[in-house]
Length: 319
Image 1 (cartoon, rainbow, N blue to C red):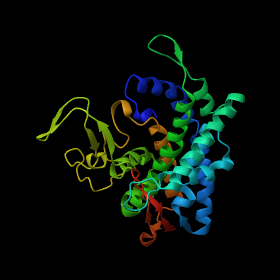
Image 2: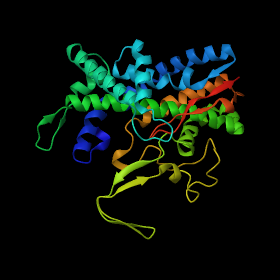
Image 3: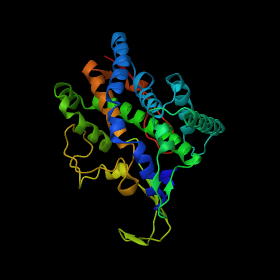
Image 4: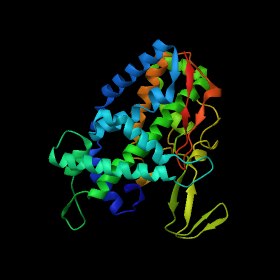
């Protein structure tokens, strides 16, 4: 996958994929995302509440990604189920269960077949754009993604992009429940939502750490780190560093944020950040619009068990 490469291959892959995964293509999804959210949330409003993950947060990202890739909408439940199974770990275990391995294999076959279908029948979707994208290599020759690279990108977007955004939306509902004054401000002034999403990413992102390998010896806080060492960077802690963020344990909807590291940093900055921001903003904005004074059932909250995604698998609430 692109995220496991260093330059120069990482830069080549990022340029290729960036030409398909453009801000224009993401921005065009605004209306689609809002329509989806409105339909699901209206049903929840009529019912007087519901369960955020099953009825909104867990549905939206996969539906959007499927539409972006060009996968049939009727496949959304299957893709979501496979994604959940691939990422699931038993509590306290880092080992992928047999069911997760089987789900990963099934996803690989699914996306391979989708790519093969788009080779035969091109369409206005991301998979077709990935097939057609090309960039000049160092030798001047034009270069395209390999079959394996295309499947891996579909997996990256369909699994990592799906789960992280789903968890961010659910976390946002709980966070705004815990800070009702900030929720009230957002209900009155929707212009605060872009900053509110950035503050949520700082406050409790779905990705709390990244692994990196040192390319040179380092000296940090009196500790020597040799070249070639695997280093775990805890961005969840960095985002609550009081030297940068005063009163870091408090969620402040319009907190001035020059930079947080929820999406990583530098050349590996998350390529899907604009899509995650857009989905989260619309989902939470539409949610609060319909439920300005909702109450989360904290006893009914369930946490998702994974090796690298932090979030919730169940969030019941009442209007």
